[in-house]
Length: 187
Ligand code: GDP
Image (cartoon, rainbow, N blue to C red):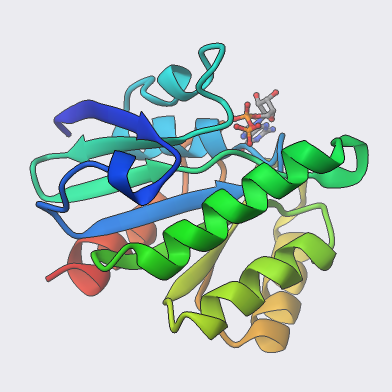
């Protein structure tokens, strides 16, 4: 896949010109969002997003001149200060509301964690703005196959959106996600 870093931004006037349909990736810190993105595109692009000063911003990439991908800053606010939390909320809510080319959001979760208040808040924003989304359960290599299936089925039933279980470390389970992005969300 040909990948190009486009730019970083916070506000709509800083987003790149919307030449391509776009997908966004969001997740709790440590869920494996960077590992997921790197495994998806088969190169270390997410490291750009981890350079100092850029971890709090929306980082936009072009994939194959077909799709823009936005790496959104991670969350997990239990330890965050209020101003940081407000900054994140405003940036994400504004993006979801304003970005007309957004085709869908991938929410990355560590499969061993439970659905929590912050995921619920994101799901409400998606619903409120009529945005398609899918849940990616990462780190399946940490569970047995039956544990993995139980977890996946239970959460799929609860949420009613597509759920994908994969391992970014082992790079397994990515084909269906690619189909979702390149064949279903963009056409
Ligand atoms: P981010 O904070 O969401 O961007 O998470 P990272 O991609 O930096 O990953 C957080 C930690 O989880 C790192 O130590 C990764 O090596 C590890 N990790 C990410 N994906 C997987 C996975 O699929 N399996 C396992 N076992 N570890 C993973």
